[in-house]
Length: 340
Image (cartoon, rainbow, N blue to C red; front, top):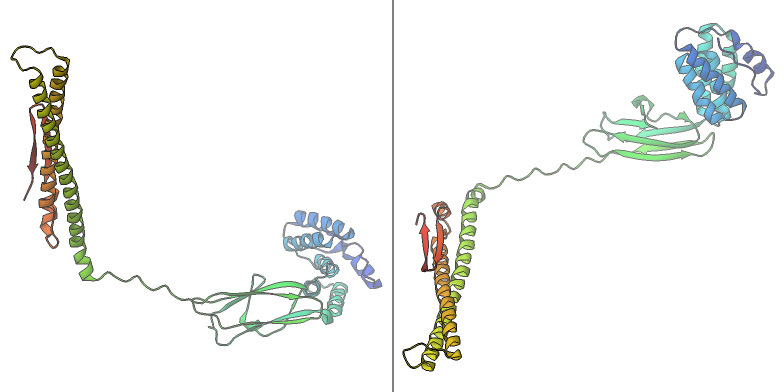
């Protein structure tokens, strides 16, 4: 059982009828939760906190629907300046009361709805006829049937969003504001713009695909030849350094011999220094000649084995070429293996 209690609505009949809702019968639903929400909503409404009370009345009615709760909810909406919601709720309460055989409740709900009707603000949504028949329109997130297109629908004061979507088209969205009761606002959904499909990726041409390996091979061959010239240049520099230090070694050796003209041991400090310098320069000259020769030979091998443009098999052959330099106390050398 749920008691309606008294409300100050300014009409004597309201006090009498709303005080008689204590005997309202319920069937099904979560009555315990519905009753708790109903009691809490009444407390909030008595304090004038309608914005908090209305959702609780609504949830109580959802859990356990009843004409009495609907009348309380309608009254809450009305006091919270939600005229359209109050009007619709009173209409629903009148139908529920009629089903219960409660003529008094039905009369009260109908009177309250009729009193609000002249104050209703209305929103009309028009849809351009050039749109597809499958277009989907929503107001405040709730779908609007095509039968409602062009029909003024009661709405509460405040902002309202209108959205329209259709497959293959860009969506439309706008927001309109109803500023006062009794205002008529109209929104037109224009013809939706078609979405621009991304162009398909072009398939590579056969000739370009076929030439790709050859171009890569040519590029690889050019890089190998460049490396060969660089290594060869280092080899030439090494040979030059070996020749210069060799000549210097010969000069130092000649100086030592001039200082010590006789064939016996020579203890002259200058002669010893010249002799030691000659040995050092000779070693450097030998290393320069060996390293320069190896580098020059390696550079030549890289240049001569580089794949040429259009030669598909050369790249494989050059990949098999191996250049292995070797050096030691007794000299140096170069080993080149592969397919030529």
